[in-house]
Image (cartoon, rainbow over the protein chains, first blue to last red):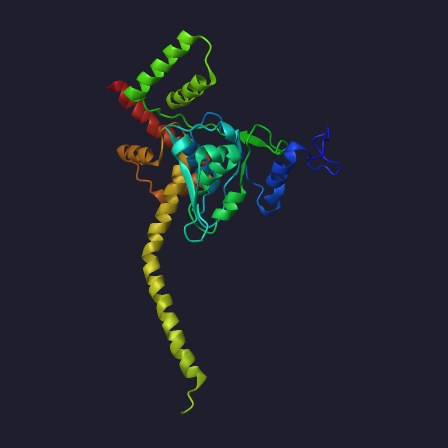
Amino acid sequence: RRQTGAALNSDNRPSGAVATTSRKALAGLRRIDLDGLRWRVFDAKGQVLGRLASQISTVLQGKDKPTYTPNRDDGDMCVVLNAKDIGITGRKLTDKYYRWHTGYVGHLKERSLKDQMSKDPTEVIRKAVLRMLPRNKLRDDRDRKLRIFTSDEHPFGDKPLEPYIMPPRQVREMRPRARRALIRAQKKAEQQGVTTTKNGKKEEEKVELSA
Amino acid sequence: MTRVKRGYIARRRRKKFKIRALVSAHRDRDRQKRDFRRLWITRINAVIREKGVYYNYSKFIHDLYKRQLLLNRKILAQIAILNRNCIYMIYNEIIKTKIRKNTSK
C-alpha cells in the first residue's frame, strides 16, 4: 500500500512489494533452533516439478548428511527461487487437479494446476514437497524450514547461501508422436517467421518436454 | 461388599503393564538390530552419494564385496561420521581396482 523508495522500513524491516512475502518468510525463523544449518538455494527455473521436489525433500530431511538421525530434525534450510518458472511435463497444466473436501456433504472442491499457478505458484511446490516428506511429528518443523519464492528476490541475502546443483538427469527420449508434433510445430514456426503467442506457448511446452 | 485394598488392584494393574513392557522389550531387541542397520545404511548412502553422479550405496556395497573387503556397515557408518577422509580413501581404493579391471578388459 505504501509507496516507499527504500527497501527497508525505518526499523529495518523490509517494506513494499517484498514486504508481505518476506514478512511471512522471516516469520517462523525464530522457532528454528540450530544454526549449524546450511542455507541451500534451489533454482526452480526449468526444473521439472516432481524431480525438484524429491531432491528438496531429501535435503530437508537431512538425508544427505552422515549425521542423519531419524528422531531429530537436522535438515538444511531450503530456499526455492523462481517458483513461477517451474516446468510441467505432459498435460498436467490443464489436467492435474488439486482436490480437497471441506467437510460439508457434497463440497468436494478442486482447482487445476493452471489456476493454482495463477493464484499462488509457491503452493504448487510446497504441496509437492510436503507430500513427499514422511508423515510424522517432524513434518511441520520441516515445512517451516522450507521457504519458497515466486521470483528471484528473497530477503535472505545476508545469510551464507549455497546453491544446490541438481544431479544430471537421464531425459527420456520423446515418444515418436510427440516428436513428430514438435517437428511440425518447428516447421510451422519457421514458415510463419514471427511466432504468435499460441504457437510460442506450444513450443515452450514441447521444448520443456525435451529439455 | 468387602473392601478390597487399593494396593491389590494396583498390583494387578502394574503386572499388566510390566508384561507389556517386557514383551515390547523382547520384541524390540530383535527390531533394534534391524533399526540400527537401517540407520547405518542411510548414513553411508548419504556420504557415498556425494562421491559422484550415479554412485550410491548399492554400487558401493557391490564394489566392496567384489574387492572382498569385510568392513561391516556399522564401522563404515562410524568412519563416515568421524573421519570423512577415510571413507574417501576406501572409495578410491575400490575405484582403482574397478578402473584397472575396465582398462585391462
